[in-house]
Image (cartoon, rainbow, N blue to C red; front, side, top):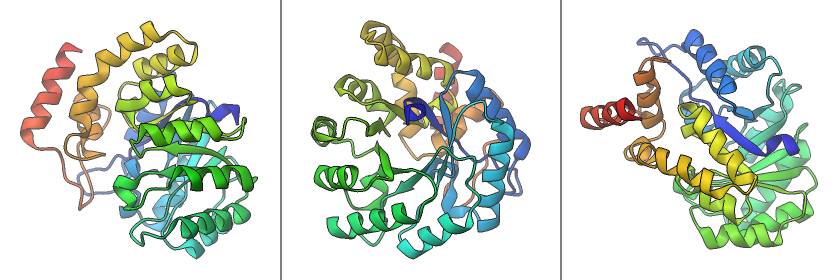
Length: 291
């Protein structure tokens, strides 16, 4: 699981004006982030607007990502749902031979108890042909996965090998890092807190911002992992205003605005996500002109 250390990037899904997937833009983005130095890519994360994608489109995106990455870096595939049986079915029916691991978000909307979260992950881990990365993002799921539940899964379920922690709770993060199994990987899911969490002992980041800041974000993570915190702070400070603008209204609306300014993709979405407001779009452009 060493390949899950460093910088992973949660890829956006570019769309055209007619809301079809822009495959040319996606290939351009994949090449851009890999050439920028990221360590692996994640397809079908929340940043990829997966709730709006059909089952057929998801399969096409997995296949396309494998083909265009062409084994230059590992690929992690997002497979999650609030219906445990649906996740099991997806894991059994999706061609995942080339995947390094599965990123599976905690059950959303249903707001299960901690025991329900534990049983959900235990069940899908038993069905998965690939290692599972837990994903705790209570701001989207409506339920925090506590440190106790995370540690229980990490110690008891062999096929659960890593976690993306996006609760924003630094005390919870430190509890997990203190008591986790030695070989259990913990990565940040919060770009703005990533440097602080790396200093606490996290192994890397699955980043939204690295879609745009591929080079500087990867360099910041690598510096921190090599205990060069003065160098990491310089890069983090340089990007900090960008993080604020990127997430002030919506993800992925913010990161797509950044990428539209760069000319990698067009600023299109599927409802209910809409573009950032004109004022924020202009602020992003002003920031990038001086970056």
